[in-house]
Image (tube, rainbow, N blue to C red; front, side):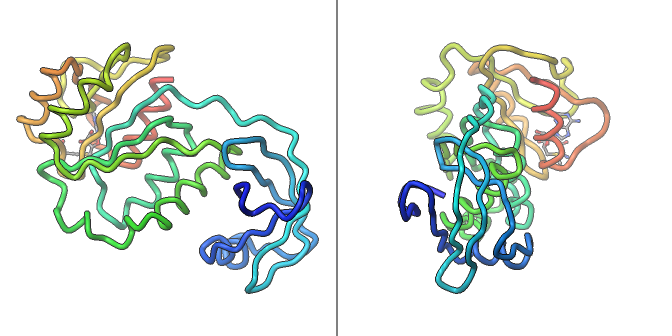
Length: 231
Ligand code: SAM
């Protein structure tokens, strides 16, 4: 929940329809149940569901935990196909990515950018599901970059200072490093992969190409495997 949902210091009412549907149909929550709840950008803890109806879900809350530390990662993710986007977004926040840029690359279908899955409330819903899963409360900074060239020429260079930059691409010479302690910008391609021109442009900005072995992974699996390995 966020501060607008507060009724008083101990009670909140959630009224977002997606959230109510999820509570009712997926979590099968009923009055009296104890659930994990968190204040966006703040602490998390337990919430007792007092009522659940079309007007909202009212919780009595007790917030006594700090969220886990985020991963110092800026993920540059080629926009996945709409059907894959929800799960990928959930993984991104469950794993604690601090900054996410959804990026156009040549092998991203232009129609993906018009998908209803990109509506702000949908995106937010899936990011929040990942946060909840991980008992986190910190949404990543999110940007949309529907044009590759202006992004990498005008904005990306200024975002790379003091960071290691990696591009995940099958067949690269180096294997993906393990156990990094420094901030990383990580580029992950679309279903069809990056084209050679994109790999070259990112390498020219200082990105190192890394691979994850012979297995070619789906985007959501690759993101999870890369982050688990890097940190
Ligand atoms: N046929 C595409 C290619 O060869 O690039 C496969 C793309 S893969 C389904 C989607 C993205 O996940 C890739 O662009 C890459 O960023 C990442 N990925 C998947 N498997 C990988 C691997 N074994 N090594 C490095 N990156 C990988």
